[in-house]
Amino acid sequence: MNRKVKQEVSYQTSIQPGIVSNVEYSVKRQIFFCYGHRLRDYAGPCKNLHGHNGKIEIELSSKRLDRKGMVVDFIDVGRTIKTWVDKTLDHKLLLRQDDPLISVLKEQGEPFFIMEQNPTAEHIAQLIFEYAASQGLPVVSVTLWETEHAAATYKNS
Ligand SMILES: [Zn+2]
Image (cartoon, rainbow, N blue to C red):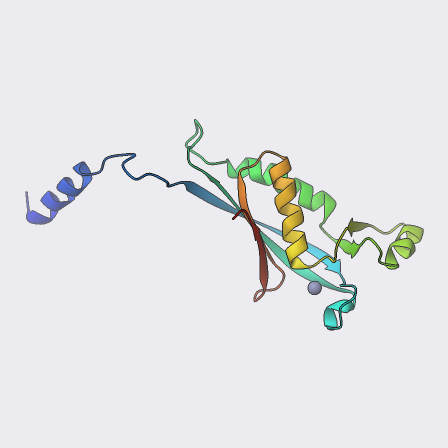
């Protein structure tokens, strides 16, 4: 046995599972969707109607794995969150509840999603976080990438 192999064997046998406490597993899943919005009581260009190709990054964590050896099966995250995002937010206008556009869209039979507060990346991340939590997923953070360069995160702290 050469020296290198001997070191590897010695390293492997020195690991004692569970010796490190206060650790956990975490997984991330990305979901893509398109949305339109505008911000009210805001002076910048986002006061105008415009759209984004948004990227949601959802992080879930647990100190223990399930019988499959997973925090959460990615398939279940997709089934729960992506299905809801596709149905509720994708290709919709996200508008604050007092936006006068809502009555126009209603009249025209156009789809929209009403938010209590301004539909900023922060509030959209919070909305998705709260939905994930309501479905019993061990969500710790949701980040919404509004562009390639700008993201907002809502997380458990
Ligand atoms: Zn925007």
